[in-house]
Image 1 (cartoon, rainbow, N blue to C red):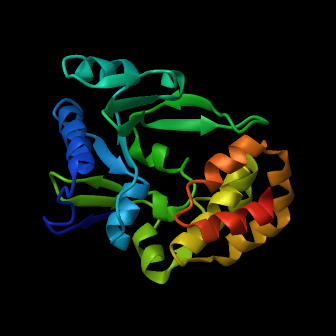
Image 2 (spheres, rainbow, N blue to C red):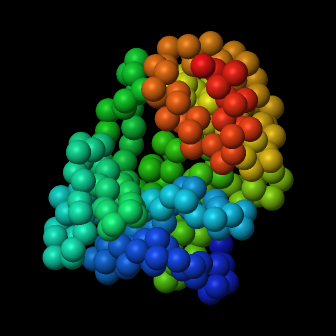
Length: 232
């Protein structure tokens, strides 16, 4: 598993949202050392893009996360607790905290979840390599299990593990692949392109609200219009 030291100024909070995210992170890492910023936030730091979502992955179980946060004045949403996800809110800002987990899919987009202490196990459930980056700001360290940093530099979108299996687990990942490719000027790697061609029909099984929820995350109306025309 690759580890990369990054400069001390790799992440310096630029606004109230990022300051809130760092505050939540520090509360957790004081109690659970295996706590990381993960996913789109880390990807966007490497791309130099504005951070729009802050997600934290941790060894702490949901009950432990709740205990850590009980004495601070944040709103805590535990509705997705069984999936290991706790959402913390301060005003208009939201940070999602997710326990390291292993997902097992059984004819459904919604997996059976088993919690784990292993970052390595957690990383294998993620969709694309560029979203599988774990960042510890205090140590200025990025853990890169699947060469996601290299893919960012190559402007390549590549699935974690078997591409076809990933898309069958959750066909919404096909829509997400197109959104990422257009939004970040990426190309599909050959295995992902082939898997999309073979499995694109699965998108028809998704509900319109679910599709639109993903499409509305696009960064421009042009991308939204393309995705609507292609999938809705």
